[in-house]
Amino acid sequence: MTKYIRRAAVLCALLLVALLVNAARVQVFQAGSYDNNPANRRQTIARYGQPRGDIVVDGHTVTGSNDTGEQLRYERTYTDGPLYAPVTGFASQLYGTTFLENAEDGILSGADPNLAPLPLWNDITRAPNPGGKVVTTLNAAAQRAAYDGLGWRRGAVAAIEPVTGRILALVSTPSYDPAELSGTGAAVTRSWGRLNAEESKPMLNRAIRQTYPPGSTFKVVTAAAALDAGVVRDVDAPTTSPDPFRLPGTRTSLTNETEGCKDASLRYAFEWSCNTVFAKLGVDVGLSDMTRTAENFGFNDRKVRIPFSVAPSNFDLQLDKAQLALSSIGQFNTRATPLQMAMISAAVASGGSVKSPYLVERTTTRHGGTVSTTGPRTLRQAMSPATAARMRRLMTDAVKEGTGTEAAIPGATVGGKTGTAQHGVGNSAMPYAWFISWAQAGDAMEPAVAVAVVVEDAAAVRGEISGGGDAAPIAKAVMKAVLAS
Image 1 (cartoon, rainbow, N blue to C red):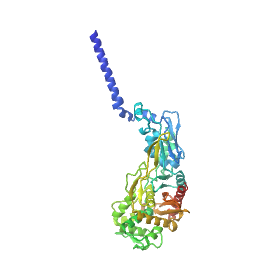
Image 2: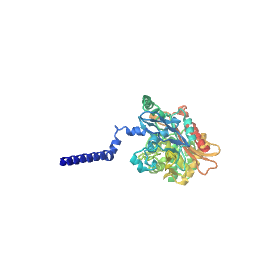
Image 3: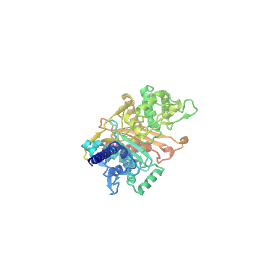
């Protein structure tokens, strides 16, 4: 009898060991696969089981959480949702996350291990951490000025602090309210379908995800390349620039919208945006130096993140001379985001260096303890400091007495460049109105802001559309807001 009891005891022990081994296999070694299984709703329930951390602008939160009492308990709320949508993105139980809600999801959801005061203990207990805060670099007044300035029109604004790369404004219109996508009800599904079907694409972030032909604003790059390469040594000396200018190897002639461009000096050509002068300068500089300068400013860079990704701006690497001429005035295949054009203006203002743009100043715990910080970082040198100084004078002259007078601010030094970019089959579509600029207060040591504005559907007769008339007043309002803060 004792023998059978021992055998039963051994069998029970073996079964217990097998259960323990299997439990360890499931809970330790295979835990990840179960956690990440799409059929497992526990993570989703836990994710929305506590309030999400907040995004902060100028010391004020622009997000919140609403307790619905349902299984996915907390829904995301937004203050001034359309104003900040290109920055915050959305956090939706049905459609996921975008922009800062996505890039900083670990902090906002509480999943980032750096939020835990005792990380090892949290790993054992698997207790969720309260969501942290994401403190942005935005200037609320500049953001509002950009949004109100664009109004009902399609377009975008990007503003940067030149010496640091801090993004002060990032606006895209038309916009939408991200709160429409919070929750799980039928209204959310209807909103998603409507927003995606709208011809105006309100969820497209035009400031960082849409590229445009930059038109004459690209002449800043061409002028810098010509000065650095020694093609132009005296900005007031006449150039050998015919008007009209026949594109090399073709029978096509390039003309100007203004008078006095034949053999014009670089200063005059920049002030009044002579296409013929800059097209010929691009050819004279050559493809190699033009490409190098464009890439030093940030074109063709696919790694820019702010912290979410930015669409790369394009300057073709293989061009014949006619294509190079057109590319040098911001046409042909040359395309840029508004953020890229703000970086160009900022590089001129900051002595020629291109700073890495960033949108997050720091992240913190719910109670304000710092988790991470972001600081200035130089990406590359776009031009020599001497060339940058000459470009600053050219840009200030364009505002004082050229096409950019609408951007002048009393008591401040303002530099700018207008642009009217043709596009569409046979240039038949409504031109894009551009303006890039920077501003420095009269008593300041450094420029405070660099801005790029693009307006897709300016309210004017086609022949009257111009960066100076449509985009410059918006840039002026943004610059004034920054200078006043």
